[in-house]
Length: 423
Image (spheres, rainbow, N blue to C red):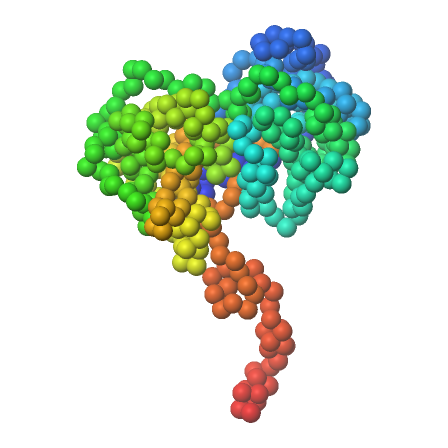
């Protein structure tokens, strides 16, 4: 139970809405100079997001590295906002506006690096949304994708080397009124510079790492803890992950590369794959191996890997790679995490598995990370399709409406039911 609770806590890290809008008198905005002094209007107030490690944000707001094609003044006009207050790179590129009554609204921009636009949509829509969720391309701009749930909206914008995602609330702007700003993003020229995934993780330390003898890293540096492949899922997921950590611990780049999928990614320990980038791009394999060593060195070697149980009805789909598995090492307080997404495959007629995602924190968090404006995470485990009338549906109550016989039976008295049975 702890395994399931821990993983649920980590990935609910998460889809929290920001605090209610605060009414204040906007401070005068000033030009930022850290990243782009010519185009940026830097937010003059204090950053509201926590740091990546859950502590209060230190220092002044700084400009985002790109405008992402977003025109805040166009948003002011089309959404009926009173004033643009400026931008600030925090856990996202946050644009703040004053509404008609002086309330502050946030529009949050993040780039999605190295992923096809169809895959960006698929990951977003895999979240466990509630019944208010609607999504699809707007007729006026069919290349866009707009997703809404409750009071929150997300727009996925193609056209650049990195897809861009804008998040906002209904109180700030309706999806229809946001369309002019989104159309402007579609038409904006793609910059030549590479964009940095957000939240910004930073570069891993590659020297001077102390490895306590009782750490997870020391435990898995020992070759006796690993088993050779193949790794059919789900029952050999733990062996696949142990072998991967061993390759990182021993800095065996070749072995590590054979265990990760061609399109594998790494980022924060969250099923939404926050701040992720491709492992095989540039020298990212070296970076994620260094991050794994750093994380495993600060975790206890007594920790066990937890993988949620897989429903027997979806085991074949997991084995073939049609659905992922998620496993986690979590510190005793459930704050520090190493998360693995694994996916099955068929090789020469036999089942095997590969690493699809690796999630780590650069340093030990002080408290659970809350990332405002993010969509809900995908399910912790793949769920079978429920066909109403299937007797196995009892495993997932309240997913099917009552049958006619159930409804008629509930209206009859016990004597009537007994009489029917006697007949």
